[in-house]
Length: 74
Image 1 (spheres, one colour):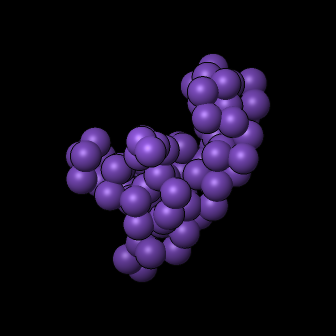
Image 2 (cartoon, one colour):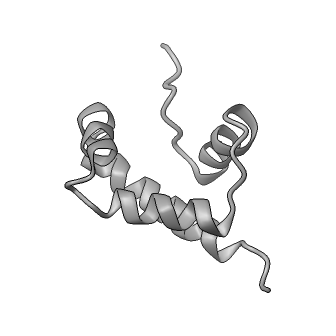
């Protein structure tokens, strides 16, 4: 059995974003990704769905929403 590169849990997803890709989950980044993933006309979103499927797009949106709730309050 081979391991999938697609994260299955929030913790795996967060690790991929922040540790492997070294992308800080800032309010600005999260908001950009939420807007993009909610726009089916966005090229990167269409590509994401082709590669990983609609179910993964929805799951990823939920993970970005969760990350948003974990941001420090100003």
